[in-house]
Image 1 (spheres, rainbow, N blue to C red):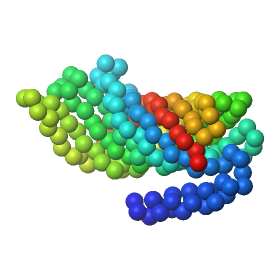
Image 2: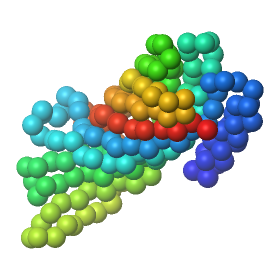
Image 3: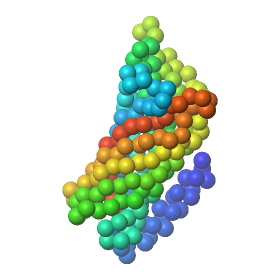
Image 4: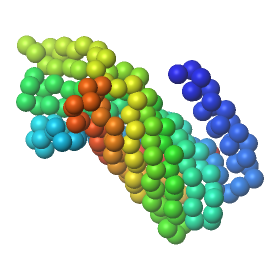
Amino acid sequence: MKKLLLVCAFVFSVLAVQAQDQSRLGIGVRGGVNFSTFGGGDIQDDDYSNRTGLSVGLYATVPILPFLAVEPGVYYSIRGTKNNDFANSRAVLGYVDIPVLARLYVGSAFNVFAGPQLSFLQSSRFEGDLFGSTVGFDTNAVRERDFGAVVGVGFNPAKSFNVQASYNYGMQPVFKNSNVDVYNRGFTVSVGYTF
C-alpha cells in the first residue's frame, strides 16, 4: 500500500510541474458523498438500500486535445449497503479507488466522462443494531480488489471550481465466494478545486 501511494505521489508531482506550461493541465482535490448499495443477480430490489459514505482524494487533468482530457485520480472511498430487514444491518467497506477517466468537454462549462476504476479494499466491516446498541465485526469475506466502470457529468461554474455526479458500476463480485452474484454499485456527488 505504501508503494502504491508513493508511486501516485510521484506521478502527481511530475504532472504538477508540467501544469505550469499548459492551460487545462492541473492537480486538484475533490471530496463528496457516495450513495452506494449492492447490485447483481442475487440481489432483490427491495433487499438493500443506499448507504451514505465519504469520498475524498486527488486528481490530475491531462489535456489531450482542446476538447478532451485524461484524468487519473486517487480517492479514499467508503461504500457498502444497508439491509433494513435484519437489525438495520449494514456493510461498511473502505476502498482506495484509482479511476482513469476520459473527460470530453462540451463548451466551456460542461463535460461528460467515463473510464475504468480499480479499487483496493482497506477495511470491511458488518454492523447491526441489536438491543439498543450497535454491534459489528470485521470480515475477510470481501475481495481485496474491485474493478468497475465510472460514468458521469461535470460542470465548471468557475475556472478552478468543479461539480460532478457519477455512477460506479462494479463488475467484479464483492465477495470471495464466486457463487455469490453481488457487486458494488452507486452514485457519487462531489466538488473539486483545481490548482
